[in-house]
Image 1 (cartoon, rainbow, N blue to C red):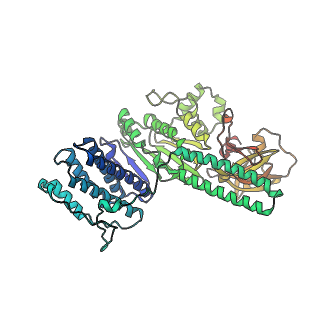
Image 2: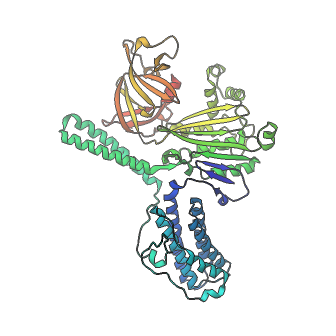
Image 3: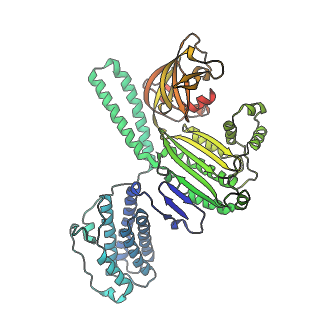
Length: 570
C-alpha cells in the first residue's frame, strides 16, 4: 500500500495492484496543469469514441470498454486532486458504461445524450479549474437522469429534455450543467501540450551556440566599434540569456517523474528475495534538468537493487538482530544552491570495511596504499570494476558491475559520489549533482598562457594571499580564512607545472565543497562568464578532475575543473 503525503511516498509490498495506491493530504497545486492536460486528453478520447458508438449499427463492446476506461481514469485523477464533485460525476457515468458492458441496458439516443452531456459537464469543470474559479456546478438534473436509467428500465423511452443552450450563466453561485451544445460550440486548443524531450535538447544546443557567438561578438566590438553597436550586442546577450532561462525552465522536471516505477521495482525484488521493505521518497517535487535525470536512471536502480539484494537482511535475520522485520530504504532529495543532493539510506547490514580491504587486495590494491587511504576513500573502492562484496551472485547483482557504472554516470555530468556506512546499521550513498549541465556561470583563471574554469557555485571569494601568511610546515600548506584553517592547493602543482617561486602574493580562489573550505592558488583571475559546457569526448573522458569543456569567443577551448577533485588531489 502506498500512502503519499506532502513530499513523501511510503511503499510496502502489497498484494493489491498498483492502481489501488491511495493518496492522502497531497499538495496538488503543482500538478494542476498536468491534471488538466491529461483530463482533456481523456475527454477528447471519450468524445471520439461516443461519436463512433453513435454511428455503430451494433453494440460496440470495444468502444464501450474504451469509454469506460477514460471515465475511470478521470475519476481517479479527480479524486487524488480533491475535486470530489468531478470524481463523483465520473463515477456515475462509469456506472452507466458498466451497465452497457454487462448488457443490462442497450445503447439508445438518450444514453448517448447523457454520456455526451456528462463529458461536457466534466469539460466545464476543467474550464473552471483552469481559471481558478469555484466548482459550483449543479449536476442534480443529470445525476437524477443517470439514476433513472440505472434503476428503472421503463424510463429509457422517456423523452429527453435538453438544458438550454448558450453561454454558462452563474445563478446563486451555482453553474448549471453543460449541454453538448454549450461546450463544443467553438474550436479551441489545450493550454498545455506534450513535446518530445529531444526538441528541448536541440533547443539547448542552439542556445549554447548562441552563447558562444555572443562571446565572440562581445570580444570583437568592445574596443573597435561605436557605443551603439556595443549596446546592441549587450541587448542581444540579454535576449539570449532570456531564451536560455525559458528553455531550461521547460526542461526542468520534478525528481518524482524519474521514480514513478521505483515502487514497482522494489515490490518485485522483495517478492523474489522474500523480503519486506518500505520505500520512502522525500523531496520528490525538487526539479532538475531533464538531462541530469537521464544520467540518474541506471545509477538509482543499481543502488536500490544493491540495497535490497545485499544490504537489507531477510525478516528472520532482522528479528534476530533486534531490528524490525520490515527494512527501510529512504531516497531524500534537496537543493543546495546550484546543486542537488540525493541521499539513499538503507537500514541493512552495512559494509564490512575489513572485508572490503581484503577484496581490494585481491583486486590489485597494494597494502601500503590501503594504509594511507581514509575510510571514505576505501568505501569508494566498491566502485572499482569487478570488485563485489556479494556472497552470492543473483540475477540483478553480485558480479562486480554496477557501482562502477554509478560512479561513471555521476562524474560524467560533474557530480560527486560519497559512501558512508555503519556495520549492522546501514549504508548511506550521497549523490551531489548540478541542477543543470548545459550553461553554467564559471570563473576563468589562468595558469601561464592557459585558461581554466571553476564553477561559480563552488566559489566563495577571490583574494590575494600573502606568502608569509601561509603555513608550509605540513602538507598541504594552509592559511587562515575567516578564522578557519584552510588547506592551500597549488593548481600549478596539480597540473605538474613548475611553481613560480619568486612571487610573494598568491592569487587564490576560495572554494567550498561539502562545507569544507579550501584555497586554490592560480596565476591570475580572468573574470566570470556564462559558459556552454560540452561533455568530454574520447579519449579525454578519462581525464581526472575535468568535467567538461567550453569554447571562448576567440575559439580557445577551456576545461571546466571539478573542485572536489582538486581537494582530493591536493
